[in-house]
Length: 80
Image 1 (tube, rainbow, N blue to C red):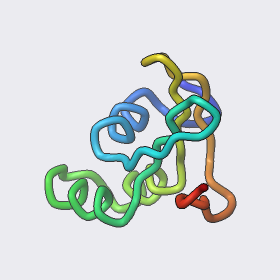
Image 2 (cartoon, rainbow, N blue to C red):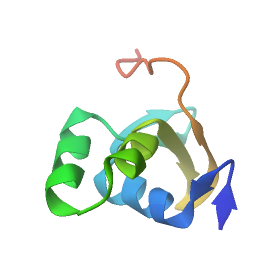
Image 3 (spheres, rainbow, N blue to C red):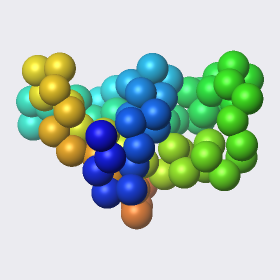
């Protein structure tokens, strides 16, 4: 599975190491600083792959991947 240039491996890495925020009933998962550091320590990936994963996000609803994409701006994580 590959969507918008994001491979299945990258989706798995986002699910395993990403931070989760809820927006409109869905989970938005992205790689925050803590997850990125943990990923760098645990996996022997190249810097290029790690940076590409860091710029991606994933939207899940009911355990199903809705979409993936590339972040072009900062996510607001503290919504009221």
